[in-house]
Length: 179
Image (cartoon, rainbow, N blue to C red; front, top):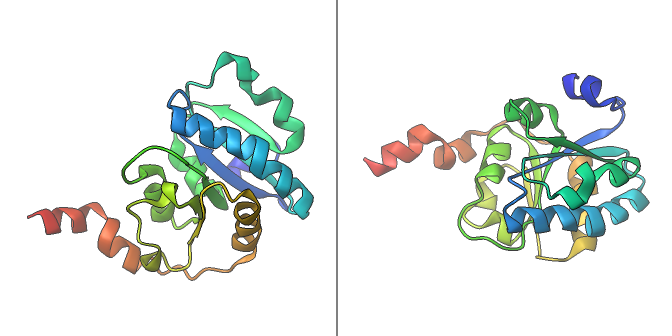
């Protein structure tokens, strides 16, 4: 409700989140994929949505993404409380094509119980089987499948049981295994 009020998003619109440091090339490339590949397909799908983009370091030439506001994309910039955005979104996007290691932002979104759509690269290190149906992994650069997965995940009802996820990805369990 708070995000709806802050960004004038209607109650019947799905709030989709993407976040990351945008001066980091893999995150910027993912944002460009959202803008130029995924969003045009989503617009054709009939889904009512807004994509909130959070993160610092957006290049000046992208002009705060102002030219995309009429295309359902809102640039929020660096936000003081990213938890508010994770809690308030309906779905998280993670279309990363580059970069190594586990993507912390995906784990964070799943930890908030959010439905997530990720590329294969973006889901490295995350076990889809323990996510309770909250994670849909799509082949890298298959933008039609990615947009279709967003629409499907949006309409999917998910059980609130996070226990299998927390058995692997909670700090207490991680520390317990390390000891």
